Length: 215
Image (tube, rainbow, N blue to C red; front, side):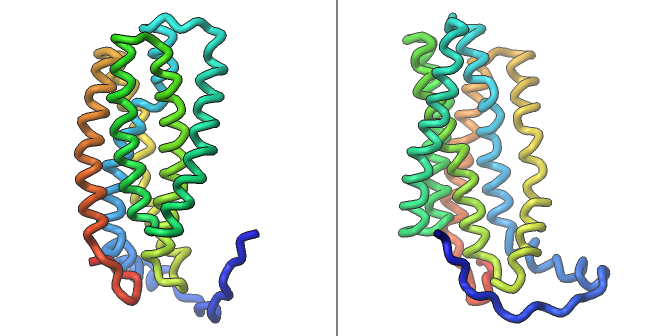
């Protein structure tokens, strides 16, 4: 049901050297967005390990793994409705800021399992589903707001390149959990996401110029 707006005339082809030279502007325009992506990506350190922690450290029975997965799916469904509402009314960058605040609460809530046991992590799984879907909604929406229509493909490629470091975050989380503990991983992730909230706030203070450039 989504109707794409009509596009403009196709851009003429250009030689590869000229194309690579033209990447300077997209990379400059995406600086704040890339820094926010890296900072918020630190939350992915803990994402694969909440269910593992529930089984290994908090005594969750094997049968509840399906409950965790269902909670993640439910969180993603409800989260998508909320994220779409925020994007429509306040834009992608504001939506990312809200998502990062929720992400920062996720590992902090996981630490309550030390007091209340593994059932706390069911709610954490729902938050993981919501915030994971939020990243998929917020950053692409913000990219579309930032990129000039005729260069959206180039901006998307540049952003994908800049976002590659985020892919190693779960590996870093695995190292921390194996060398330390799940509690240490959750504490470090929560602390990192507090900084990510500040970064997302700083990104929101920038403005997009008439050609899509960010200041």
